[in-house]
Length: 483
Image (cartoon, rainbow, N blue to C red; front, side, top):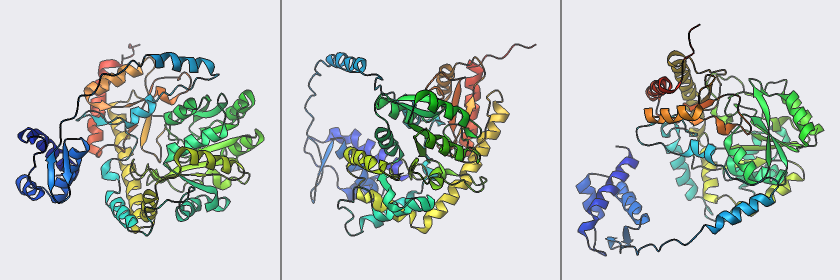
């Protein structure tokens, strides 16, 4: 049995037996629990730790585990209705209210109920994560001299150098800041580059987490449409001219959610247009390590072709490893780097050193390249499996673009289909989808859904999820009348 399942089952069994012991009563020894439940000592230790964390058990070194004293009753909550007046008054005083809408982010973070096929995930399934390599890296990192001491605020020099090597000869380790994942890096970048109330140009559709960051900072997202070749540069130039914006946020490689790659002809245009507007380009390079086996050579990051300090580059190890390995980076050149550094330090002080050391151990191990190759192969297989199933079972859902990287497909619903109704029906049928509406900062042209093929166990679960989605569509989509 999987270790985590065993831990949960043992913890539940022990909870059911706690009433046998009076408060302060001693539980059976770890050895007795191992023999009785036929589990490993590690499982017993973790199950007891879970009960300790829940306040049900206390442990005493050398003495054992004991039932905790009952918790005192929680006092009745006070009256918090005054906050509605205060928060609404703050919003009324702002040019752009700093409303925080996390619904688009939560749609990919929330775990669906048991038995539901998770097409809404934003991370690799546990079977695709390098769990053994990460565990070994963390163990080696913990033994490094000074592993628990305070790291440099900019990050470990060796890790900054490793990230910088991916950006060509335009960027060195001194231009890199280590961040707590890509979301933290984007937050720092937007706060540093635009004052509250300012417009910020974004791709349309785009990553909901970035829109949430912008709105929380009081910025005004302005959409610039994307097609199969990436952002439409003629509309980007027009948007800069019309708004006076000084920031454009883009994902040139395997754009989220469309999967598009910025074409060779448009890449220099984006840099030229931004430079002429006196603007920064925030390059969110989140999917470079999620390339599929059949992708061919990848284009360089925009930052590698930028000599004038236009690009602020964001990258992360999280997507290709684990949602808990929150190690990312910001890279920039010129005076803006000092502003980025100041905001980063104020917000986080620094990324915990053990996590940085573990990241260094991981990317420096032979297992790292093997993991990247395995992910590339498996993502292609899963993409092809989902694409074939959708075309066979759900031809009415339009799939305009099949990406060669990333972890999802972007589907357009038939005209007139109600996105929210379909999502509710799909959940009843046992499959969770990510809604398309949060990916647009203005009115969407049609209903969409995003389906992840990386967050499920494999091909059979993909096929089952599409079958369930077929049932939901039969319930909600109205067929066109025959001519």
